[in-house]
Length: 330
Image (cartoon, rainbow, N blue to C red; front, side):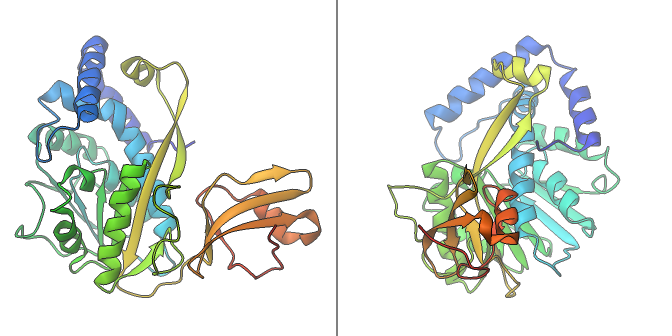
């Protein structure tokens, strides 16, 4: 389970308590309808304080969980960012995620166009010693907007809201002067397509892909047959269940992401692309390899340490370079 930081959880509960649960549920339903309807790029999804509160109740825990998972997998040894720029930051889920992964961060800037989201995000950030000094800028991000220097630049669940024509320039702008850029989108075929296109722009501009891909070459997954995505499980509070009209005490957030750097940091030899399949004395893994291919790997009990590693490996985790440690393929 991916839990919100204690301060964020308590702060979010206090903020949501200011709104009747019924109002939040109705606002959440309206928001869901707007997103399903595919409002035109540049349109307004959030239309007031209640909408923003409903969005925070429904989406902030999931956005935090997905972004934290992506950042942990991108956290290469030796990379200790001091500045963080979060673009399209909403109520600040990504800055909380980054602060948990990299305590080295000292300067934080959030660019967000909705004033109500900024107000809520700022109030939540004040509960954290690491984030209370964050700068919040009301702006639509993109080429032409001046930006602070930052080692780490993130954009979570926002690139896909831009028109396809505007995305390449936005990705280049994100990566300018950044040591690492991380982009997260929903783990749907459309979200993966957005990430795949962003990955191509980053690689074409000379950046090294450090996660999830173990290589800089073309994605070996055939479009239309499958898509690269991952999953993280998070708990639902009683209010969360009521606002979302859900019954389960948890939800699984599927996401796609790419992380790229200007320096050739170490990266995984391979990446697990699906839930491992466990049979008696055997674990089967589907991995993306540094040979620019997708490969099925089967590890048996007789392989000792590698078998124990396979039993503890999850969807999205790194895996040793294929061909090492005596791995076998079916």
